[in-house]
Length: 339
Image (cartoon, rainbow, N blue to C red; front, side, top):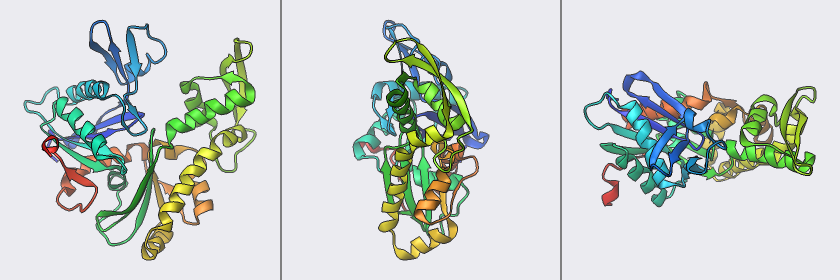
């Protein structure tokens, strides 16, 4: 990997950028704040995230990616441009860029990602699929003809894939991940306790007392919101047991998707997975009890990778070295817009 090459894990919740031998140089929320009156970017990343729900009408603070794909092309281009500018401010020439995308992304969505990167200042653009990048980042040798299953749970999507001999054997993607867990908590608290809470509060509750397998009813926290009947502020104590009730249906959607992939995987590779286990990556894999829930229902060992949040980004950083070896999941698309 050249010192000028840039790798981007373009996530729904966070954008992580690696550069050359420097490792991770940017790890910030995928949020952009835009001034509609002046037609300019006010902030990106952490500073923009602080503005969500707190801006006047003429400033919009938005997440331009939804469910793992670009929902607002213009805002994504502006956000990428600012982040690439941060990463390459001392470079004299335009960088080569690898961008990670979900395994089930369509050609139209591929094109949107590539054109956003080219517009943001890339010289060449490459795409790598998330399961390949996740396993590379987890330190798994994917060149061997043996099956490995990875479940990458990000902010917008969960990618489930079986990898063998440098390629994706079976893969699917489900739009059930970290953000959907937050929405499930908001819905549960609203319906059961008639209290409306925000996304940040739901995310904090998920990280603090979220548990989907054998929760401890004595572990709790206080959350604050607005009573939807009275319209007044109200506090509520919520336990791990409450959170299991809120999250179990969403977690089981991921479990069922894992089962569906295993059902169509060649038996020899299923045997490999039973021996080596299922690897969890992505921020969503940190949900307490999820690994044990999967192992209990699927019947195969399951473990989170070391530092799962940065796994995909580390894999993207390694990807240039594997460009000529990967049989599937890596696409050279520097001339994509002319295809």
